Image 1 (tube, one colour):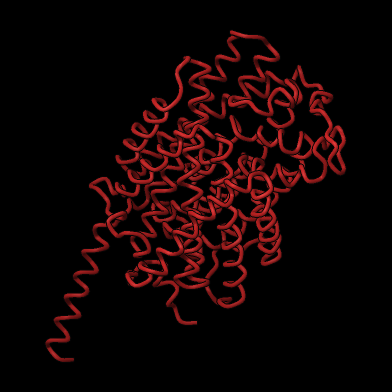
Image 2 (image 1 turned 90 degrees about the vertical axis):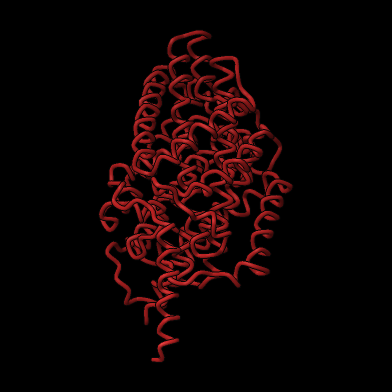
Length: 471
């Protein structure tokens, strides 16, 4: 090799080393128990608010059937994601899997769909936090949204280990509130109250399905809110201790906890207070307790106050999720590269701050139910692409090491794929305008890739190196 060529190679290596040195996450900061806590905290706000809007779409029976189907879909996805995350333990999560399976464009399509989900979900949660604060303190609206974003973005800037330990404590408090709610509702459960929504004239309508068969489909996006973002556990892969063991435990363990809470709350909340009373509530657990025990009881005040912890836990942890997704996409050159710069605490500061500003602006709409639909659009698109990635990798790369193997193999991912495809269309049924707005945002991301970022991709990222392994 000529001396000039050697100097160029050395210079390029130095530039690569400098580039990645500025984009390092803190290794070994998260154990499996924190990953279980992370998975629960991503989602636990869905138990406190949002799920009940599904009662207005499908009645109790429609939401119950939708929840069982969706829980099964997420359980299948957890098995599939456990396999892929131990195969490729990088901060990109689903984006990384699709990048290896379908190349740069497939990875980008998946990553940006996940990003839509994670950037919009905190805005919906902020609206629900405002509702709980208004019920408790008489203060809500934009001031509460702003405080939430400022305080919790600030904590995340301190680093992953510290942030996730605080999150774990908040989540534990929120779980206590759910247990108190469940115990308080048990003596007042009456199955007749589940079916108190007036029966419509839709096909198949009954007291069990007051909006007919189509109500089941329309309730799917709100059933998803019971579990939305649990698939984000693999985003902590580069910061996890022993990812091969801890990631499957985190995913599957958190999913089982969440499914138990979802079914108990769906039965006991509506069965004690009545489905009709909760279908449009901004704080359904508090309103259920008030309906049963009356105003100004310590139980309602306790669940209202501690219920804020559940909403805060999800808000807090999804900030973590969107920052890691943006970090991975930016580090690879899909998004502006400055978004993946990390501070002295190894926290990707621009990836935390800029989406936070956008989320705050979205929260000012105050439309929590519509923001849920937009987040679900991104989520379900990403689920379809991730399940296709699993099938593709099983077929095209069977020799790759798989420390954890999905029970049922491709049958499991095929089931999840079909259910996710159905869920994509369900959002269109509820509100076509909101669904199309989310689709338009997705199209803008796609155009950015086609016109600009595909020409500026970075070599040497973990997912790219993995993709280049010879068959």
